[in-house]
Length: 397
Image (tube, rainbow, N blue to C red; front, side, top):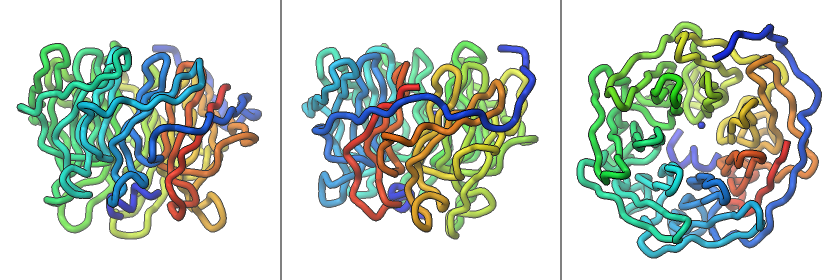
């Protein structure tokens, strides 16, 4: 499957598990007001700054090749949309990354520079307090790429992996960006995992101080493979440690990963039992990884959403919430999904989300947890047959 085809489709004692489903997850959907000053709804980078959801870039009807360079902020209290300044902003792109530092949003990399598939090797910081952009240095930065991951550790942004479609390269390298010093430091590659794209990455925080990388596709040659391995990287010590494969989920890419504060949860994606050249094989089950005990545990499939990709996954503080995506079991004969469910890792149970008032079916949308609500916006409806969407809703549990 090509990259553009993908675009059209994140401590305690163990309780007694009660595998299965519970009653419907309580909650309500409230439509977002119309008039978002952003002409795209697919593959938009997003962060939450504590007051606003910040959106930037992506795919839509912005230019001849569909790549967009605009942005918008949605204020949760006022329920209003405001365009982001374009002065000093990065050029239009998609498959880029965005992280929130606690004060600023950093946008880096992506595809769409110079040509529809041209890789980008630059970036900028956005300050919502002043509505201003500042370019970040490209000296010692990773080579231009998209489909990578960028993780904020509290001190540095770690960029790793990705692809250059023009040269047909998949990367297994990266660098740390030190915001205060404004400089890049190349990552140590000794014992680093094989290069990959569309993988997942989560920061474990103070628990173990590592970035956990898992899955993706790579392997080189004419047929890329869905990878079922991963590694942890300690950005301050600069070392890699391969994750165990016993009990790990099937290899996959374009999946989601969330960090619970104690474990990483992998769910969804495509590639289970297949490769990127044949029909996509959707992944039916996920798993949790404990970086302290270094063990994988399966996630119950009973009551879980249908297998899918292009969905959103957020951690609420107690549950992982899945919504939307693309699945052969959604719609008429397969397509975009308008349902979701909440997973409780303490009981290994799923509970479906309320569908009344939910946004229309979509995949590739924005899904952000604001602290008390799930923010859904944009995406592609109708299994990729329709134009990108510019609407959304808030789900409050």
